Amino acid sequence: MARFRGVLGTLVVLQLCSVMHLVAQQPPSLDTMLNDASYVFNRYQELAGSMNCSSAGFPERIKEQCRNLVKLTVANVEASKEALNRSLKSRRRTLSDLFEIYSELVEISSNLDGFSSQIVMFTQNDGMPYAQAASKATVLAANLGREIRLRLVLFDECAQQR
Image 1 (cartoon, rainbow, N blue to C red):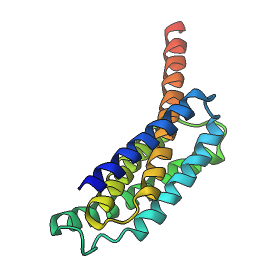
Image 2 (cartoon, helix red, strand yellow):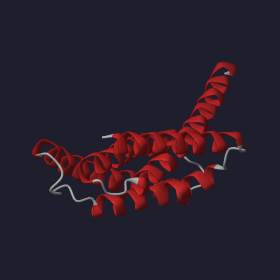
Image 3 (tube, rainbow, N blue to C red):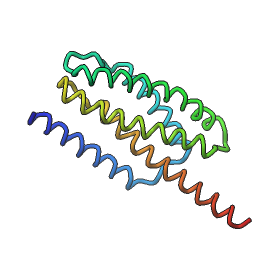
Image 4 (cartoon, helix red, strand yellow):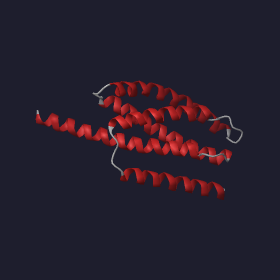
């Protein structure tokens, strides 16, 4: 249990440090964010595909929740990839597509963070790849959320001028 607390504490510190470092930098362009979202979606599918929900270390309740979560999120990622592909191909990105991508990034971040702690807790395996991917998704979602807010402010200003 002490080892788990130490590993979990290290993961939290690493995630906070990486978030603080990235926040201090200039925000990425929308094109960069969309390309990064493509990477995060693909990385999630790769990690979810390798997730062994039937691991001997997991309690039965966790195994079932894990299988359902992986199945649903992989399906959501596929649906969100349609919005992502439209946005990558177009110069005029819609707020609805950007919000779809943002929402999926938030969900992926939460799932990967949960997977990383569950793996460490129940199997004593390395949860770092999941924690790193969660951190990337979290920062990307924060940046994309900021972009969406800026676009909404501009939209409101234009609407008020009419």
